[in-house]
Amino acid sequence: MPPRVHLVRHAQGFHNLNVANHTMHDPLLTPVGIEQCRTLAKDFPYTADVDLVVASPLKRTVYTALYSFPEPIEKKKLKVIAMPELQETSDLPCDTGSDPEEIAREFQGKPLDTSALATAEGKHWNDKKGRWAPHSDAIVARAADARKWLLARPEKDIVVVTHGGFLHYFTEDWTGANKFAGSTGWANTEFRTYTFQSPSDPTLVETPESRERREGKEKPLSKEEQKNLQRSATKQWEHAGYQKAKEIQAKV
Image 1 (cartoon, rainbow, N blue to C red):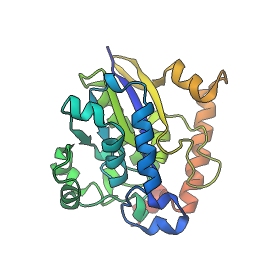
Image 2 (cartoon, rainbow, N blue to C red):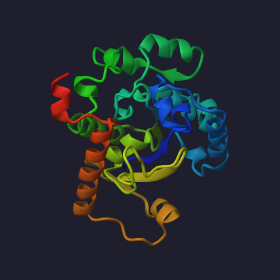
Image 3 (cartoon, rainbow, N blue to C red):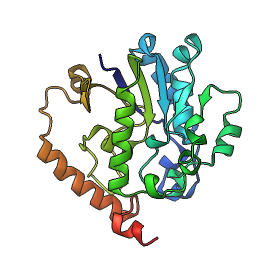
Image 4 (cartoon, rainbow, N blue to C red):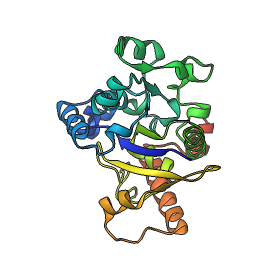
């Protein structure tokens, strides 16, 4: 049976306070963000079921995972798996992760598995080139790879902590992504729960309970409406510098 996946956007980081802070490299959580994590830890309804925690290797996502899910991490002796495919979409300083050595120093003694950053590709996870490039084709590919990886896991309840922009690619749900450049339909520490289409199909399907919790009885968008939203949102993001177009990236 495919796992149930709980997707979480990171808590408030310093880059979320204003546009000027987008120049901060790999920013940490704000005090408000830490409190958001504590609230999520208290209110998350599936805590007892969680048997795997995965996070983007950026500092704000790793700390969100550690602060929000201490009970399953401690009781089940879990390590948060740092997964570079889950990193954010842009190459702004705030969305560019730290070198593996810096991550090791930052989280020394904490339950974080950074083995994916020791591979040939993983060592360069933060250079924003090739597989990690900030253009739509590359992001779509790594989102698909991450879904396939999750589908193949033996665990039954998985928490994934990642970023607002990437979550639109990951879920293929673009609602709320085109309000303004760089926007996201996900609030800080918002979580949504998904299953997979089937044991062989890595398409994510939001559970009825999750969807109703956030949208009531509103009818979901069609596939064509989602595609139109994606085109509109990514065009805005590229124009504003939140994401590079493929042809721009090719010239770098």
